[in-house]
Length: 125
Image 1 (tube, rainbow, N blue to C red):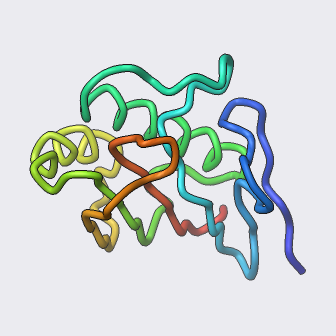
Image 2 (cartoon, rainbow, N blue to C red):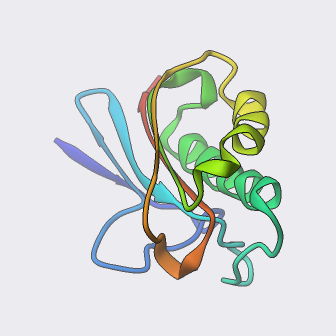
C-alpha cells in the first residue's frame, strides 16, 4: 500500500508528483528546493540561506510522514555549483547528524534557478 504525504508547511508540488510517498515502511520524499511555503517565493540569498530553507522544507515532510532527520537513510543532493560544496556541507551537517548515505552532484540547472535541491529516503517510525 502506498500512502501520499502532503503538508502545507512545505512547498506544494509544482508538477505531477507528490511531496512524498510512504511504501513498505520507507518515506521516499521528492526533491525540495528553497521555496518559502507561506509565500511561494524562493529564499533570497547565497547557498547557506537557500540550503537552510531546503532543510526546513525537508524537515516538514519528514515530520508529516512520522519521521525525522535521524530516520533518513539516504540523501541525494544537487548543487548548481560544486564550488558551493563546503558551504552546503556546513548547513547539511547541522541537520543530518546521523550521517546517512549520500550522493551529491553538481547539475547544469535546477528548477527556478535555485542553488540546491535535496531529496531523502527515510524509515517511517
